Image 1 (cartoon, rainbow, N blue to C red):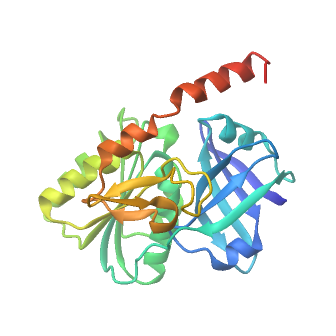
Image 2: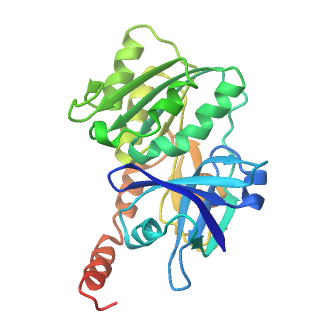
Length: 276
């Protein structure tokens, strides 16, 4: 059992939790994730580690309530417990050789980008950041990130804050203004990462993306998290979650992400109707 030390709302339906998990915190690195189970009859879901402290023994997670499990998780309060909290899983991000980096986060994807920005900043690297959201209300971790980067650019779909448009619009403007980057790290919705990679490939900028597909066991046994990278099957839980964005088959990943939408809708309708 893992105690919730702190909980707060960051944006509509987006929650932050700090969890007492000393064994996970001891080894957690940027890019890694945990798999949790809220209750005995619940499903297992992966969530990227947003931050951790090995001395105090906590791990923080940020999630959006989009399915039944994240809604169940969101109902827990400070002082209550998560049943399972397994990790750290996956390969840590390979950041040490990067010097001049542009980090791009979209929506809840800003959360897993946070520890990478923090790590690069602590290593004295040059880091610019673009974060994007549908509106001002959905921009998260802005203040924390602003203190850890050289330049921060914000984009909102509706123009309610920062640049009106997408993160790719800001990316294109920066490149065309003469900004030079050795590497781009992009984390967010699949469509966003696909469009970022299309643009960075055009300009010849190596790009890393973080894949968070359907996942069950986190050990590579179930095969649910498979992605195609460079024409070969890879498993996000053990080979990733970071991959060369220019080699990822995003169209396949997008199709696979929609596989269980109908089942999720039916389960939600049943719970609302009181039949589960």
